[in-house]
Image 1 (cartoon, rainbow, N blue to C red):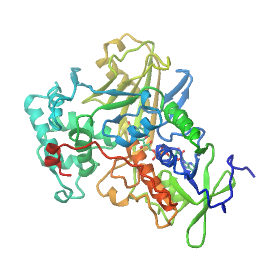
Image 2 (tube, rainbow, N blue to C red; image 1 turned 180 degrees about the horizontal axis):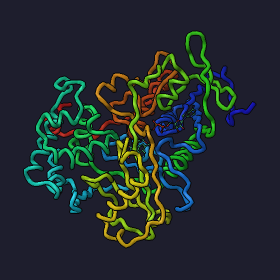
Image 3 (tube, protein in one colour; image 1 turned 90 degrees about the vertical axis):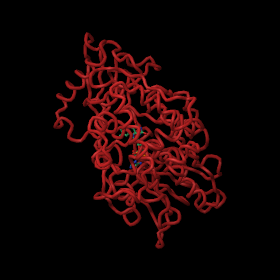
Image 4 (spheres, protein in one colour; image 1 turned 45 degrees about the vertical axis):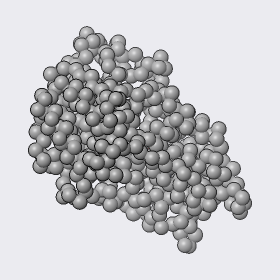
Length: 473
Ligand SMILES: Cc1cc2nc3c(=O)[nH]c(=O)nc-3n(C[C@H](O)[C@H](O)[C@H](O)COP(=O)(O)OP(=O)(O)OC[C@H]3O[C@@H](n4cnc5c(N)ncnc54)[C@H](O)[C@@H]3O)c2cc1C
């Protein structure tokens, strides 16, 4: 029988309480990081060779190194994700883009920057005014729509209404919906605008735009995610005493008659524990403890995200990022060359990509290459060396009307079993911030259950009086 490559310890030794985190995605890593210094012995078990979960990279022979399966971006409002990166020394591998680059349907470029000197939400005025693909009247209607959404309370909305239906009901013009609401909401929520709930859309507008002058900053990793989370964060955890076992799939949770967890089985060996955090996607969590996490495939659905990787024979993208509006391609990212890695590589990201161009990969590549050539003149003469399409069919939780009721909290009916993961009830869409929050919430609950309380979750960006008067809270 294979054994776990950790010291199983003596379960009877009550001096040291062992907590096992199952799953080494951002939720599990954040949970483990929160427990450093609490005196709790933490062991993290991850089934893959490298931690990081969906925020992952693959080894690419063309690039000769790690390439992210899909570019990940955070925003200034992601306070817990940014705090985790700061605490664990990852923040020098993050870049803050204060200017957002939009490329309109006719190829017009707009560099839109919120004002640092105006109080929120007025800081957005220059950003909106800078969107050259809208007329002044459209900008006014858009600003009014944002304010209306921010003022909207859940009780005022038909709970089955989607964001698209709501935007149409308040008279947002088709062009404003197609060229602003659709790209912004779909990329922030990872789901189609005709499927997402109104509260999810409101959260993007309030937290991601209106709340604070720094909220809308784009935070872009400058190194592969595999290095950030799979190596550097893991190294930090190990140095700080967390035992991390990769290549270990947990297949069983042993419990007493009253449900209390006493050990976890992975690689054929049992690891005794005093508490466990399952930081797994919902299907895997439901498989391990179906009485605690009932299968919810009818209520919890995934939404796909596609990344189209293009390797040209030279650098063709002359902006750090670009939002392409009115096209199939939604975001384009120039590959960071901090590692000396992949010149000529860029990524085109398309959220809510189900059924995209009938699932025809070749047509997708041709369409995306043509669009890149339309908007980046340097690509017209460049030779395409290689193209690759990477789709995760369940990239994020689909935040449809009613989904919040199906997202479970960190605490379960079992006093020493806790849940984390971007799909749990964090109030956030399923993002890196949502995952980190879930891990921190679960760590707080688990630490309290072991008599070692810890404060892990940090506050949102503070809302000024003007924002509070508009949005409440
Ligand atoms: C294509 C794509 C693009 C995205 N873009 C963005 C973005 O731009 N910005 C953003 O904020 N978010 C983005 N996200 C979402 C973000 O990646 C996720 O919200 C976040 O990484 C989820 O973390 P998690 O820990 O909750 O889950 P996961 O990352 O899924 O982690 C779960 C872990 O559990 C492990 N595991 C599963 N079963 C077992 C088992 N039985 N035993 C042991 N281990 C097990 C898995 O291997 C995995 O490592 C994107 C996601 C995808 C897929």
